[in-house]
Image (cartoon, rainbow, N blue to C red):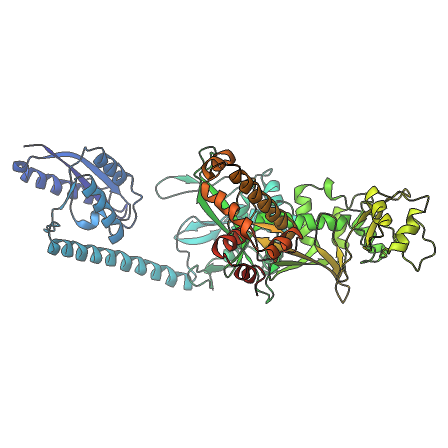
Length: 638
């Protein structure tokens, strides 16, 4: 008969009594060994004892238990013997998970004081009942301990653990330590001086002030190390120093039996400063991946919250284990933080390059023009952007920015001495102006007659594009860019009565608020729920501008026409897919675009695309709706 190796597992929840010559663990082991000897006729043999002393049965983080399960997987153990079921686990879920592992590796389980057979339904019921009572006993004991701790705190008693810096323990009571108390007062006063946890941490690292050093009951030395910012935050927030005991369960503070070592007024000033710092963007140590935290809201004032999720990385070329996705989220709306931050940064950069003279006073323009955005560090740019933007409203695929202009003192820290941004400095003409100094910057719409007058001005330099527009008498507005050296360059542009276009490359519209306290920038965007890095699908962004979206759609139509021509020349779909390195179904998607309504194609080519239409939506319309009327109904949302 084949030998059966029997492992004994013993456990005790507390360390109390383990120092005795014959303790509970020895008793469990001896009883299990005797039981194994009694089963010698079944070829049972003692293999090894796995011992976990002072560890609760409500957790799986037990060193000896892990070693036993590891040996079982290697085939070294065929039977596990315990004194009682609750020695193995007091959690029903953990026990059942272990039983699955036991069955997987053909290992049996025996409790020597509880007779049951798990091969039938009654035995399984008995086992579950025993485990239920074991878990109930553990939870009742835990509740009893928590209630005792809560009652002790209500009486103002210290309930154990490492004493805080500034106090020692004597008969389970907190007694002030004069030297450490001076260190605590110094930390509070220094924080009011430097007004920053990181600066306070850096300062204390160069002094002899360290964390609380003490020795546990088991003789283990702890503390005596340099402070981290999180440690300083907990210390400054602790109400122990004003003579109170805090209850984490209900968040209430009770008068303590110990003596306070910090004045209440000093403590309140520190709490006020901490609260003020938490309500501000971290300017000195900005590692926040969310540039616009608490800045974005919907049209009803609900604020978008920062949200992060991870996806397991399947690409072998990358060493990281998962890919992180960050969003500004609100009730099913998810704005990708990276794309929103990129769009916002470009808006601020183009705003600083915008002439602004038709929007702000001369003194306000000078304040903005003294900023060299390109020379700012990433942290300085982030701080400027957050200071500049009061709020952002997202509604109907549009981001509306509210730029602060009533008080521009926040710009001082970002301004560069002896610098003036002359990018896109503008001078304009109209029919009502007889003469205008080219050095003056006056935003006026340019008519055809003014354009012709400008052409005849010997001081002006006219671009070939503008010259052609004048000769052909095209009745559209143009903007004239000039620097401060009397040189003018003209380029065609659209005039928008609702506001001014932010730049040639940025289709955002800017205009002042009615109360002249803010500049308002409106930016229409398109959300890509399924972005791709395919060279024809776009850059892989989840949020793009309307202009970028139109470019992607035009490229897609062009690609569809090219595939159609390749197919007509005799190439199979398989050959096209192999040549383009894409799936055949993707090739079919592009081919379907050739059967779109002519009105839809004209709208795409004229860049007049509704904000809810992206490339995936266009694919869906082309493949799902063969009828032109149905296609237009979905495309134009009518």
